[in-house]
Amino acid sequence: MRQKKKEKGEYGYRTTNRRMRLMITGILLLAILAQLFARHFASEQATKNVLTVMAILTVLPMANMASPLLASWNYRTPGETFHQKLVPYEKKTLLLYDLIVTTKEYVLPFDAVIVHPAGIYAYCPKKNLKTAKAEQAVSDLLRANKMMLSFKIISDEHGFFKRLESLKPADSYEDDGSVEYASRLLKNLSM
Image (cartoon, rainbow, N blue to C red; front, side, top):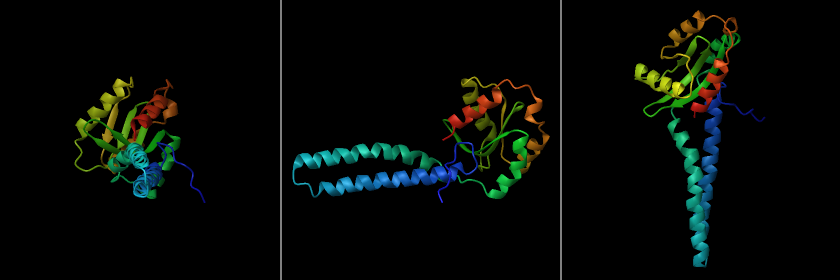
């Protein structure tokens, strides 16, 4: 049975994206090796040169697939129990899952992000994270894209759920389009 393709922001995106990138990188690597192997059986120098150039040019798309794969290698989709604890809150506010946002200094794996009219709250379980600096870096990215909602990183799961509990339902606020814009922006900033 074929699994539905996960979109950015959906639970399970990291896992399906990782599989897809791994498969494409492997296919491209096999194509490179086949081209180099075929080079040894070519009798004319012109054919050898063409096969070499083809192999070199195939490296570029492979590198484009492999670099995000390597950058996100250590970050897995959180367990299903974490997701099930969040499902009841999806009626209350917009939740995004499995985002990996990169800044100049940080690779930030956000297991869940609350996008609410009161602000954006991201759960990032990364150890040894300088939260204040990372928050500032992401806030700068958001402000550069004209997003004025406040941004907060929460590294403690209990604190994240406590914050989620304290929020009023998003539909009790006036809709100015900022929640939808913030959601699209975070997905675009994510790998």
